[in-house]
Picture 1 (cartoon, rainbow over the protein chains, first blue to last red):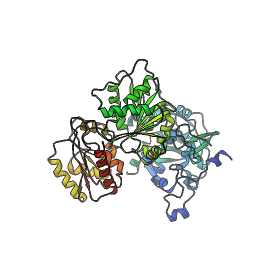
Picture 2: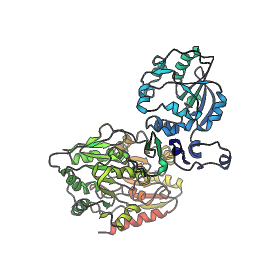
Picture 3: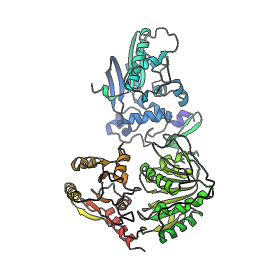
Picture 4: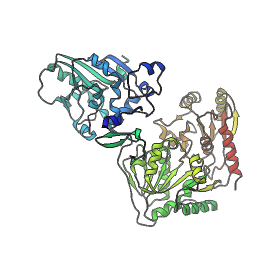
Length: 212
Length: 368
């Protein structure tokens, strides 16, 4: 039995209850395949539209809620790699349709953190999409979670393109969480000269951007 | 069969396989450094500022006798001095160079117990290990939440589980697994309300039981007074009673929502488990800076307040099981200076648990 076969279980990846838990009759009949049960999936607040973040148009999948924060901590701090695909898993087809033919580039996380974790969290989150995600940037080892607002706005000083790059064509810049939008802006500014068009996609967006 | 080294899980559904290694996802969120126990080379003696009663001395000796042979259930009523009853056993184990840990379900109780034990054992390094206190994990005597026991795998020769029937330990198999894995010797269970599992172990002779049904001051346990009123009536009656009550009062509510409503109506501070000001408010109440405090079951056990009176709102709420009712009633009359007090159960109906609670208190009061 292969590793992926052993890991494919009919249980919710979060609460370990059967996948049918909390599903309505409609959802039971028409829901796309998922790795979370109905209750856990409902605890995520879906956005699935473009939102203005400063001067950027950002396509967001979910709002950053308490559940999302808990799961992000579990993936990144507790190294629970199995939980990583929960954000993209049921939206694979939609995301493929929306960003068809585009090159995926990810916002960087610090090298030290990734080494310590043993895996790249964002790459794992995007794995269900089965697309190549380019890791073009490098970032200094700074803790954004503990940074002040003004420190975050100066994140561009800590991000740079690793190697010389040629034109990338149409690009999707992707990040897991968008709080102030500073990292996205820094990366977008660095990428723009090397692209024909640039779209931005985040898995979880801070709710303050949705209230505007 | 694969077994998790931390929580003892053997159920296949909780394991994922990464690079050929099994990883238990049931306890994966518990991460951190492991702790260590120090061995004290001198003679260890407990320093108590008061003498134990004759009955307490007898029970204490019996606990030590049984704890050398196997697991023990110390079934003592609220306020019987469970902490003092196990001191002889703790000292005995420590003097043998063995490792002793005390585990409780709630962080609040750890923070209350640690200074008490430090005062009793001034020569030892007593460390609290709980959320916010995980920097120093090494000491002679470790007082930890059950959540933090994963830091001490196969470590303790004597593990004292205080209130094993308390939330969240009683229904959390991960925490129970941590406790099992942390203890390599014998376990002492201290409770006023043993659950069915402990009772079953006593019946099947895998656990020795020691009982103490009297408080050291020999006064009876206060019997709750029942007041049947609709919720609005309960709040009005409480308001009137509080106006003429000079003593400190703890008001228990079954839900956070009701607590917040009461806080608005009565202008009294409210605390619950997620409250960031919980420690500060409890400390203020203990020091008499505030005389009345609304709380959820977060303060139902393990905490002692001098001369406190207790009122329960909606005592018939399904959240209150028998153990919770007994524990809440047991907050009153714990100290020798203030051995009596009042407990009111305000309720909109009579629950089975309320009846059982009254019966159990009556039985304890009539036993010798």
